Length: 249
Image 1 (tube, rainbow, N blue to C red):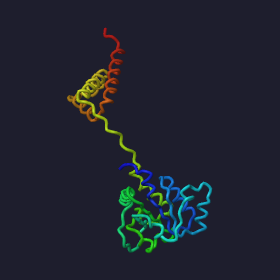
Image 2: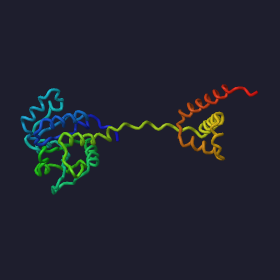
Image 3: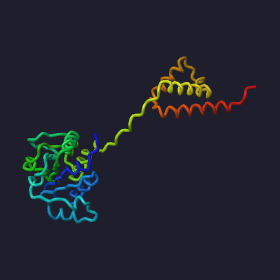
Image 4: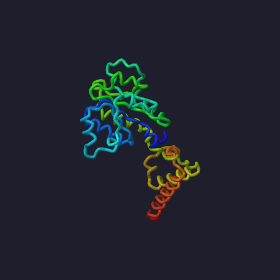
């Protein structure tokens, strides 16, 4: 998948609903900054906690320009897709629930054309049913059943990482043209010379040793530009062994 552009990243709105811990607010903002996301929205945060997070030494620019809203409806009004996060627990959900990987892929696709809101609930109860009613579908992190609920800051970091993980994957280098059969055969012949000169094949007498070496070289799938180097290496090895051999009496 091609890289997400900054314009696409800027279409994501991370929305924290009724958060109470300044450390969690700060951790979510830090995760956003780590992954190139800049638009944080908070809905009815615990005001002292929000002020403390924003005034902390080294507070990121994400927190400095965070927008504050009185309701989820207002916070997501300009978004074409609204996705809620949930630990599920024993809730009777009325929305499609997607695993993190599938949800992130759908969000990336939607970011190409419009704004997306990603909602995280309070530390104590998560998103309420009223909050969830504003969502198109839900997403969950596949945590262990013994402890399914994640810290808010950690949950935000995991979700945002998954969102950019494939998109940020380094592009594979262009596949190099393979060496031609004639080049590979020259390398094979020179390698066989080196093995004979070194006595390697004398120690391992096998009837089809030449065929085995030929198959071995071909399994390397040498690119054309490397074939020239390998041929030069084997030529130098053979020359050195022959020139250093004591003359026969």
